[in-house]
Length: 544
Image (tube, rainbow, N blue to C red; front, side, top):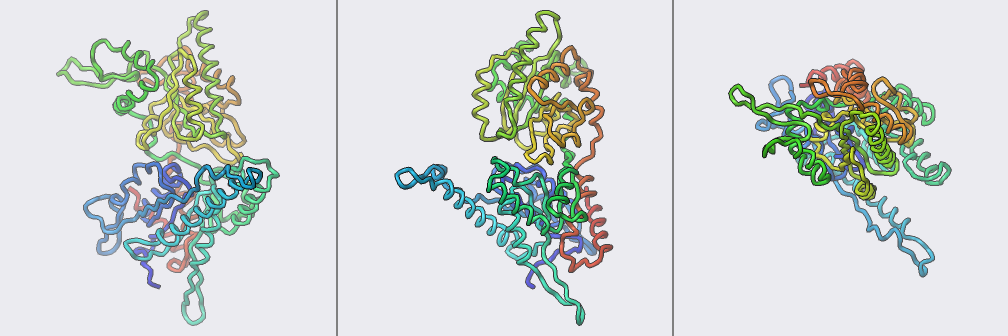
């Protein structure tokens, strides 16, 4: 076989596939980062679009192999690259023109546009994915490089699960050992279940499309060599309803990586200075509020921080602003499955409640700045609704952040808002884990398995309506002072104490995912379980 093989038995070639914009799939990027840390070759396949996380953006330069006399080691030195571990394959599948959806024939009586559009779209996906997997994913430096395992994100299921499985069985290798022993091996297929694909179709439960999608997913699930899922509820469902073998599945809860952490005051100042113009352009009221705090022409200040000069030697230092606003963050995909109107209605009711109580009780309540991040089809619609609101205690800003700035902004916030509702009832919103990594409590809308992550009154609040959310935000912030570290007290402090110390992605992945992926790889080089375990141990030592 004219195939380039890993120089070390511990090094495998894993292909990680996202049938979507890979820049908007953090979990699969975290898989890629962890596999690289363990010393494996990784090919990351997905659509073009948003930037990757900072650790992967420059990985053609960062992750490389340097060989010494007796073994290989992972280095992060641009000047001494010997062999890149990461290959990034991004493609844009063919998409028919949108007008085709409404095309009709027979004088407008027979709508054929939508079926034709979907058919062309499917063929575009098939061609793009097949070319990326069969040709581009296995090429490194113009040489064929055998694939040991394919790790796919599900959903979407169609056509990714079938194409990946066909690739695996079409690359079956047969070798002989000794006179009679025949060894048959092929690349392994591991499915990372983020959700159930058939539940994503916005149709009735008995619709033929949903039934076919469920049948397709149910038949392909047992053909996998390993499975990862985001909740224990999903694991139980897959075992009971999709006939996935119990020994082939592991629960890999989402966990925040190390770069999600509380933001320091100095970094917060730099970030707010960077975002200040964009925020004030969207909401001019913020500029007026900042200028009211400004005692001179000093522009080196934000609504949250300011730079002062000390008396001893004229040194400058960053300090928190007095009476600074409260910062709330909500990350949304702007799709119908995240009803953003719940948050808007809650903020309108909250604003009215503050006005009413200030007239009678003279309460103390900070101005709320609500930053909504993300991209999606309904964003423009909600932006027009926001522009029509007349709120004097709440400012709402929509923005899209660079990948490196998103965790920093989360680390600056006082409260997170999650509007994610699972279509299957089995997945959990990764955004909540990101908040928890930054030690920021959340208010999250309730659904069936949310209790695996958010316990109401323990590490956050759970709501079912805009009235409940409005009341929760009011209770968390009214008559609450900040401590010396500029953190809010009261219940928010209690929640932060319960969030602190959450486990991180790296150790969680090593414990629950690495062995599943290795076990799915062909064993022609590592035939015994003991050898595979030694591979994992050697890889674990290659961490920072």
